[in-house]
Amino acid sequence: MREWWVQVGLLAMPLLAAYLHIPPPQLSPALHSWKTSGKFFTYKGLRIFYQDSVGVVGSPEIVVLLHGFPTSSYDWYKIWEGLTLRFHRVIALDFLGFGFSDKPRPHHYSIFEQASIVEALLRHLGLQNRRINLLSHDYGDIVAQELLYRYKQNRSGRLTIKSLCLSNGGIFPETHRPLLLQKLLKDGGVLSPILTRLMNFFVFSRGLLQYINQRKKFRRRWVGALASVTIPIHFIYGPLDPVNPYPEFLELYRKTLPRSTVSILDDHISHYPQLEDPMGFLNAYMGFINSF
Picture (spheres, helix red, strand yellow):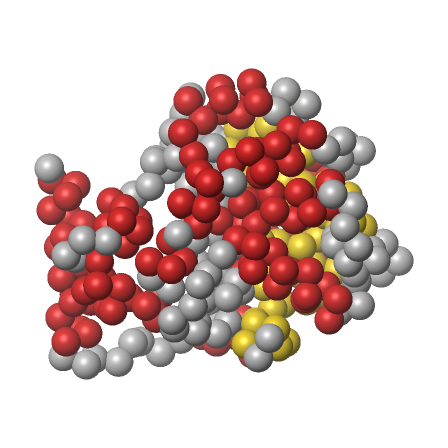
């Protein structure tokens, strides 16, 4: 009961601000620097923000980072430099509707479109024929699953995936526990239009949250892709995650994907392991990448 009232109390602040027309705060210096160091490309008339850093000279390795909900490519900033010491190219984007990318309304947001945007970005960068390492988190895990499905189908123009590392994503609908705010926005009801209006500049919208329903509808397609490919797959897990609870999630993951390796971080690490324990996360990922 206390948790419910705390969340309502937190929502009261943006509610008051929105109806008093208080503008959103200015970007922090760190976020401003992140934006100015990045670039934009156009996908079907929409501007998509991305970062592309050149790291180790002479290495052929490329890693593409796929962020979670409801955040942006900035989620990776704590491990960015470490990745550039191992990979020649480190690339991340803000999905459509997130971060500095465009947020069209109304718009039918889908995992399929986000996967196509990733493919379009790599074509834009001239990397469509290169072998790509995917590193994903949360919402990005599902986009990675769709990319993996397309790779498995050997469709022309799709990514060639060398490896996949997932982290704290609800890849199994049956073990996913959406937070109260996600439930309110996804399922509608009297509060949903108010919350959507209040926070659409934070990308909280019912359209974006339909990925939860898409994941249930396309479970066979996306979990099947993980189970059937032969590329190296790894999962980095913060076990205190309320969205993918321990041990239910991990037990199902190991049962469904016995070939995948898993790194379990310290007991206090939760849903954002790359931010909560960047060194532990980076070490786990490097251990995976260096194992094949």
